[in-house]
Image (cartoon, rainbow, N blue to C red; front, side, top):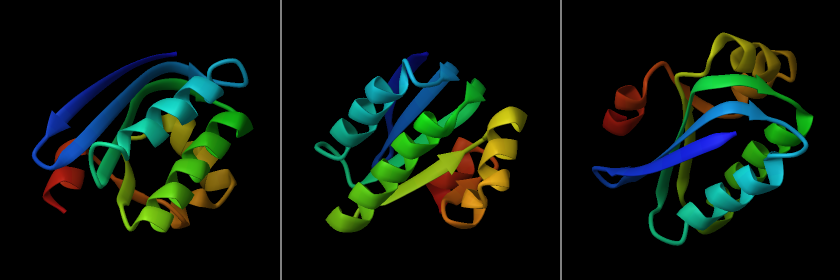
Amino acid sequence: MKHEISQKQDSSVVAFSGEIDLESSPAAREILLKCFESTSNVIVDLSEVSYIDSSGVASLVEALQAAKKNGSRFSLAAASEPTRRVLELARLDKVFTMYDTVDDGLTA
């Protein structure tokens, strides 16, 4: 898993790429939670994620819970087809705020 964090408008955009699995999910969790130290709006770009397992999904859920606790916004954007399928199977597409593109998330 690789990641890149950028500041756009009032948001931190975290772009992950590769696989978010048991090996990389602790790092993904740490990256996401750390973003809330500098902003109250985090958008996760999942367009380049080729695979996500339950531990990766758990990291996203934990970040969502942290956002709710802090009164912050947390959303997912541009989920790749494999990632979208996993989220839909777990019915988490109804739990997360999801946008088709990062720009959609920024303007919302």
